[in-house]
Length: 134
View 1 (cartoon, rainbow, N blue to C red):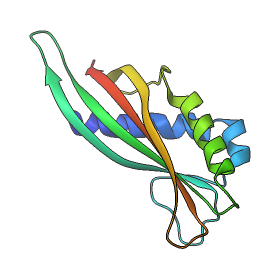
View 2 (cartoon, rainbow, N blue to C red):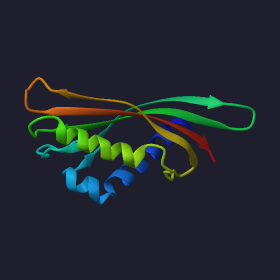
View 3 (cartoon, rainbow, N blue to C red):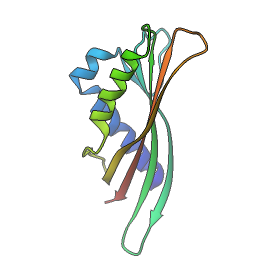
View 4 (cartoon, rainbow, N blue to C red):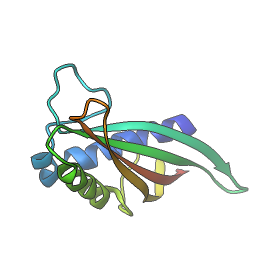
């Protein structure tokens, strides 16, 4: 089922990112929902979009995942370092999903922009994942 594969992928991404000590040194949290008063830098597992696929013998889901970083350090260097670590942790790795097999997860694109407040740098990394039902 498409929605379940998205939830399973989100949990696996969270576990992968939150379990990494090197990323933990760079950020103050990894969130789906950012609690009020959270201190930057932090990571948000953002928007996800899915599309089912089917053939005669199996079914699965193609999932686009957005990972965002928010940082108030001067310049974009820290945001780029955080995004680089995220890419290392997620690109072409074997994540474990309950009820689904992860066929692949690959880095697609990224950007870093300075927000309108002039203080915050927002990094956006996009990944494409393909899952198959067990």
